[in-house]
Image 1: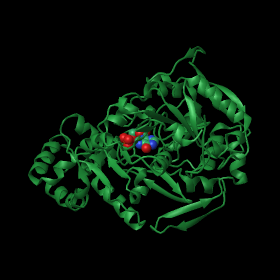
Image 2 (image 1 turned 180 degrees about the vertical axis):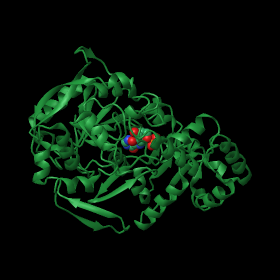
Image 3 (image 1 turned 60 degrees about the vertical axis):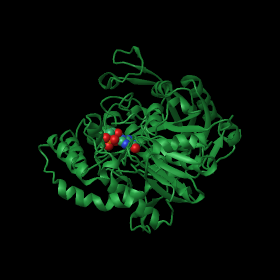
Image 4 (image 1 turned 90 degrees about the vertical axis):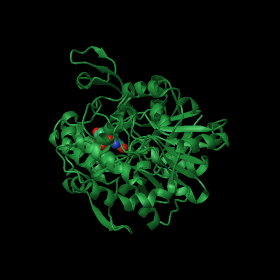
Length: 484
Ligand code: IMP
C-alpha cells in the first residue's frame, strides 16, 4: 500500500502510543509533517517528553515543540496546544537550539491557554519524588504533576497571564498559599521569567480558534501524542502515570478538537520488545523487580553499561557542545547478552542493542517483551485505529523472541489486564515464542521480512483487533514499510 491509500479522505490524523511512551511518535509526526500534514499539533504533557527525529543520520530531540518543526521552512504550522504545560525557559532553550541548527520557527503557535510551569513546580516535583525514591513513580522531575495539579485545582497560571504583571503577581501570590513549605519570591520569579515571556510573545495565539479555522480551510492536521496510554492519568496504571490524559481523547481535546474529528488514528506499539521508564508494574519486564530497581538508579545509564560490559565506545563532542557516545549496537558482546538465559542480562543486551536510554533524563529504560494484553486494552481505549510497529529491527540477532497473549495470577488462574497496580504486579505473562531473525534494518519491502516476524505480526493483529499499517525498520523516515 502507498501512503496515499493510507491517508485517503483523511483530514485529521493522530499519532498516539498504546504503551508507556518512547515508541517513536517523533519519527512519525516528522514523517507525516514531511509527506502529508500542513499543521502539526501537540495537546498534552510538557518537557517530560522527548521526541526523537533522525534525518540524514542526524538525531534531534524535541521536548515541547512538535517534531514537524523541521519543516517550518515549508510553511508547516506547529502548535503547542491548550492542554500542554509549558516551561517558558525550556521552550526558549528549544528556540535557541533551533537557531543553532539553522531551523526556522516562523509558523510556530503557542496556545494562550496552556498552563505555565514555574520553578516552584519543579522544586515540588523533585522533592516529592525523592521522598519516595523506592517504589515511587520516578517522575521526570520537570514539574509536570504539580503544574497540572494547580490547573485542576483552578489556581493554574496560563500563558496569557504572563503578559499582565498585575494578574501574574496576584496569581503567584495565590499559588504561594498552597506551597507554604517553599520560599517563593514572586518579584524574582517575574523578573526571571520576563525575558522568556517577551521572547515567546509573538507566537502566542488562540490556537483553538486557529485549528478550527485550519480545518475549515481544508488544511491537513497531524496530532502528535505524548507519553502513552498506559501512562495516562485517566486510563493508565494508576498511580504510576503522568498527569495528563495521553489517550486519543486527551490528545484531541488538548488542541481543541473532539476525538470524533480525527479521521485516522495511528497507534504506535514497540514490537517485539517494549520499554518503560519510571516505577510501576510492567508484567513482561525482563529481570522483573531486579530490573525495575536497577533502572530506577540514574547512574545505570549508557556509559555505565558500556563500561561494565566492556563494550568499546568513543566520545564525540557535538556542535552544541554536548557529548555523544558512539558504539556499535551489534557489538559481539551485546549480541551475546541479548541471547543470555538470564533475563536481567538479556534485558541489558536489548537495551544496548536498541539504545534504550531516556531522551529526557538519560535513565536506562526497563525492557520487556511486547505485552499483547496491555496493548489490547490500550487499543480498546484509543478506539478504532491502524497500528504502527516500531523497533523490530533493533533485536535482529536474537535467537528467539516472545509476545505475551495472556496473564496468570499467583494461583495460576487466568487474569485480565487491570489498572489496579497491586493486582497487576502479580500478573505472570503467558508467552508465545517465535524464531529470531537476522537484520531487517532499513528494509522497505514487506515481502523481505522474515516469516517468523510476519507470523508474529499477524497473530498480534488478530489478538488486539487492529491492523498493522506501518512497520518501522530503522530511525530514518525512509526506514518504513507501509502495509496493506
Ligand atoms: P512525569 O510525567 O514527569 O510526572 O512522570 C510520571 C511518570 O511518567 C514517570 O514514570 C515517568 O518516567 C513517565 N514519563 C513521563 N514522560 C514520559 C515519556 O515521555 N516517556 C516515557 N515515560 C514518561
